[in-house]
Image 1 (spheres, rainbow, N blue to C red):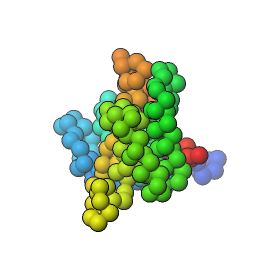
Image 2 (image 1 turned 45 degrees about the horizontal axis):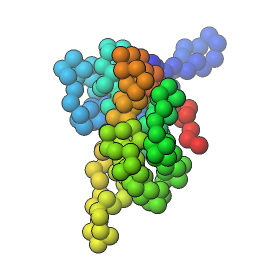
Image 3 (image 1 turned 90 degrees about the vertical axis):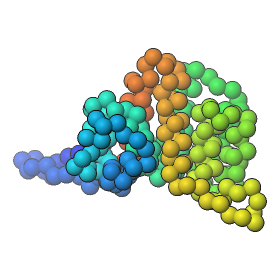
Length: 208
């Protein structure tokens, strides 16, 4: 994966120059890694305070796929993170089907990505009960519900969700997608989904 240190050729015969990293990949990795626990071996890979893109490269190259997944989930903005979870889940269920309620919930999350209105956010919340809070679809809808706006049961008291929770749940969806079809090969699928997420960060996988 070449998530961070990309090169762009100026012209034949000239030295390449570093490309400007997309905002999500340019963010300081250390700041985002404070949101989850890193094992010492992974922590040593960011002791020079690299960008998120560079840290992702290092984590993947050294087999720290869980840390790469968490880092990318927090680096993406909320719509991008939900889109990543959606694409991962949809690809996973091509191999092993889920029930109609789960499909409907995934499409509700997609509707919010395309049009992030409060009405679409509330619709996702209503879909959680039918799917459960341990399924890909249920967790993705929960992530949408926690994407912003009040989560209070009464309009008289506004309660905002913690800003990192949406990304955290989307990262869980990506993990579940990795184990959905063949748990014994989840690392292979997770590497693939990390590539998808990096593509989203670069603007290569627009929602629609």
